[in-house]
Length: 227
Ligand SMILES: N[C@@H](CCC(=O)N[C@@H](CS)C(=O)NCC(=O)O)C(=O)O
Image (cartoon, rainbow, N blue to C red; front, side, top):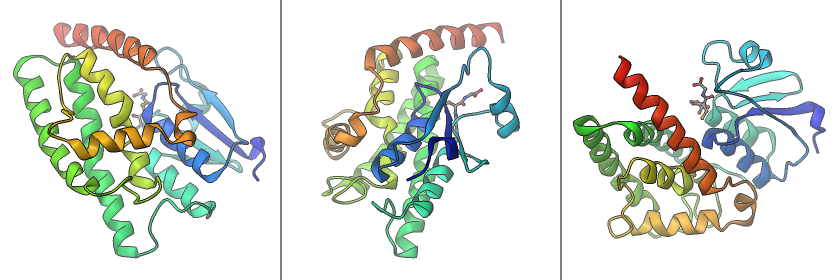
């Protein structure tokens, strides 16, 4: 088992990207790591700026002094470094397919977040294109408990934002993307995922998440008006 000094995670409490890394840790049974919460809105640490100088974003994982950025790259690194509880299939084609599906779904995070503070036609376009893309996710989960099959895998981790952040953005932006009648497969997966004991352990409260994004919405809308 790694010592905390060998494994550090730069994070931000409300980031679903950071939680991907923590979920992967939990699934692999890695608990001995140091978590450093960044003040992303007001004062990024010099460590973050030094380790991720281009994007200046979290998560950043530091393993034995070496830094890695990008949540899904980090999850892939964890998968290759700790072999227990595989998150990806062995078959090279299936592995590639799952990774490329995760890349396709990545845009939806930003589109649904942006929709939560957008207005009028721009908002409508984002909501409609996200709903259309959700049909592909619905097809992928059909007949399965998890995207990874019987247990939580890479795609479940990648799509975890759908379970809490999406409902928070829907509430903040008064919009509906995940209609349970239209997406019964995704809706039951949400229940399966959030009820996994390992996942439940790392779950911010919905009230706190909604409050955070309500405040961000006000800031964002102010920025749009000024532009
Ligand atoms: N593609 C990156 C995105 C990471 C990202 O957007 N992180 C946000 C927190 S959720 C961040 O650090 N934002 C700080 C900023 O934009 O200045 C990943 O998956 O790791």
